[in-house]
Length: 120
Image (cartoon, rainbow, N blue to C red):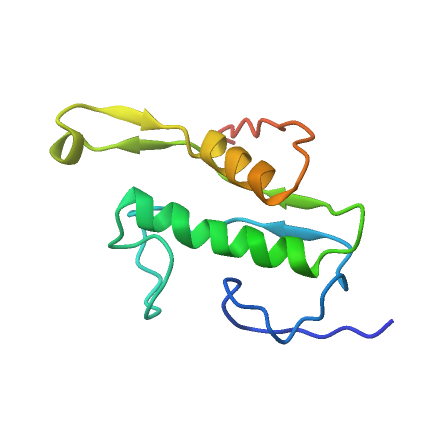
């Protein structure tokens, strides 16, 4: 088996052939929480709409490169929105937005796994 590691931007995976990947596992960047220090990064300094638009481009590319019977596993959590921005604290249901995006692209939603993080 040949293994090739590509360091790049998942919004444009032109170096990856159509229908050539068996599985994608990803954990997208946090929205407006962490600056990864990369120009044009997804998430930091963006509106929610811009962030989701960037993620949509990633899912579209994932769909293109995945083999038939596609499996895309996404580790994403909902996020607290600060009251400074929204006037009150609230939770942004990012998981629901991602499910909706992926279904529009052509993925079938197969369910969620809840990661219950516990302190040691």
